[in-house]
Length: 115
Image (cartoon, rainbow, N blue to C red; front, side, top):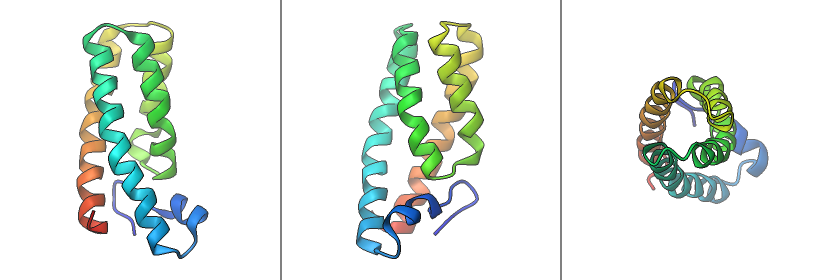
């Protein structure tokens, strides 16, 4: 299972051919990512860059395990900028791209795995 946006091989390395475990892992991702995205967005809106950095860091592992190539560099830049309390102007486009891509991946995953 993979798409242009993501690849499930990272999860498959952990669960092997166990489809139930695969579905469970994808389900955990599908439940946790929307909450983390909301917290990330809330932190930005509240100008709480520490919170932005925390949730960017939290999302980084999900992005890595699903091999979401379009975000691997951007989520790290977002985390770094936020933790350095750097320019909001540089954070905003990274945040928008992260939201857009993760929401598309969630839709594709739910369709592919029938969650």
